Length: 206
Image 1 (cartoon, one colour):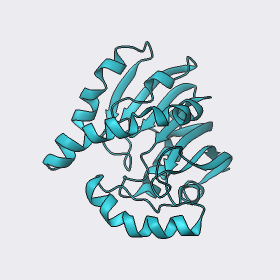
Image 2 (tube, rainbow, N blue to C red; image 1 turned 135 degrees about the horizontal axis):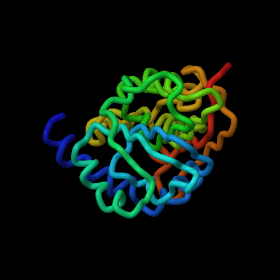
Image 3 (cartoon, rainbow, N blue to C red; image 1 turned 60 degrees about the vertical axis):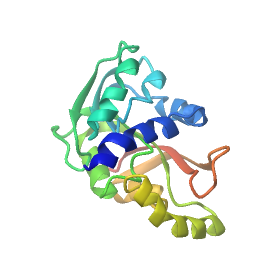
Image 4 (cartoon, rainbow, N blue to C red; image 1 turned 120 degrees about the vertical axis):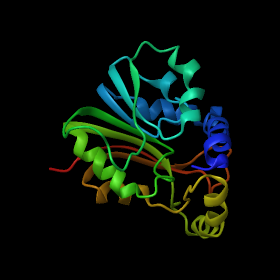
């Protein structure tokens, strides 16, 4: 992964994504998770405090060893079993129809092929399962989008390949989901090009 991505970036992500500014969104997106849960881009376990008690277990997909180490204190504070179960969201080591829910937070911006990862999530979700997501991406306002396109090359270099201009709802729909709930908004106290969020719940299309 390279020294920066392996040793430095997980600390930066833990600090920036662990800001109190994300707390309300994390709490909202985790509401309704139940049963066996797949979490793509587990990072340093920032969602753990927001897991509802309806979760039976969590299978975590996380490529960064340091991210997993940074999660230790949070893992010690939950009674929900959490297992690091894979490294690549684009190729999941699970049978079809395995999970009741899936969770992705501030992750689809960085996965090289976000569409492939979402198709894998759809494959492993059981019938009636739900995908819960909160992601930053393409803004609803054209003037903000222009800034996103200008800033994206810099963002990709300093933030491990993070894109600012991915259309999250379109990616979810294109992977074979129907979106049941969707809220598009700007994160408070964050520059709009970096803080255009899509928060929603989707189910596999029939």
